Length: 131
View (cartoon, rainbow, N blue to C red):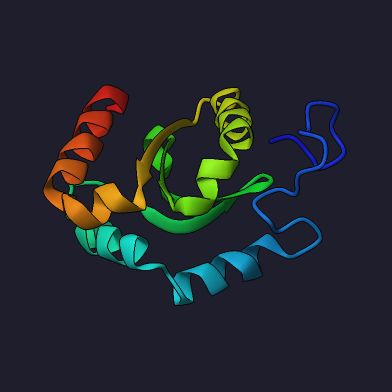
């Protein structure tokens, strides 16, 4: 994963808002205080309910991934309203992860809260693609 001082770092951005902070502590804090969409999705993913083990708020390199299937390198990100203003950063971040063979599936809070069954089917499809 790129370091904060690498040349391909997006200028003027902190990495997931955790630059200068311990990512493991940040991830633990995020696990303790999930937003409603993340909490709902975790209920559908935890305990290998889809046949694979997802990790929640998993630190990897310079990033903290909302949900991560380590064996097949699939990240599932649940994007709230803040992501509307940071589309360029999200695209850059996904490219950084893709350079390390980590595929990112992006979902919105609204998708998770309004149609969890459809979201689970989207994740299952991504699992089959990575399987």
